[in-house]
Length: 329
Image (cartoon, rainbow, N blue to C red; front, top):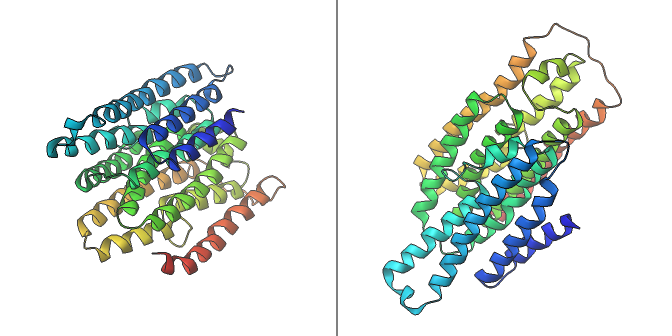
């Protein structure tokens, strides 16, 4: 029931013709996720639910306030017309967790289950992103948010040992790429979001399936066989955007679009921040590996399908999008 209303709320927001209908869809979306976040086996879930409600309600209040103010005739003056998209965009940035409005995202993610983590990092970004793309947003504000999200998302992940917080800061970094893609091409944004969601689904499924929450657990997990290492390395490198893995393709499309529009400074900042995030992923892998002795490769019924699925997705889908990307740009 709550999953259905969660989907309906998002669809209502992105298909609405007015801001009031979009606001209703966002509220349905928020209220549908909160019962799913509550887990009686996890004491931190209640705290995460309250934090999520407070931040999302604050963003909804700003959004509703701007709609009511904008409905008055005197708000159509030039200065107020610039003030309206500023606060409107801020409310949407809070909802998606972009820097510097990201203060709630790592804390909420760290106390939630892996399923809720996946929903917040992927599905919950659809409605705010689509509304932001089709609204009259100030471009220089989006560029500032892109720079802050890329740097904060990359640097903040360096000191983390909790895998959920690492995924949260990785999401903040990927938000900067998605916003950069939305500046120039909606199709590029859609390609980036789909590939990011697929990579996140694969990686979070591995975390959930093996009950992993902290970096210290990875060394014990990798002690079983080397196939587990290979599965995680493929997906982490794909999430970091290292060629020739799947995650490199959307980043290449964004870099191409930014370069052709002479936004080289923004391209440089995004690449540097991605290298920092890639260092975080490599540190996770190598820190866990150097703590182990050499062991034989052991193919089991559990990890062989996961390995084949990861390799298949990272190779076939990458080639597919590479063939269809040129006419879509």
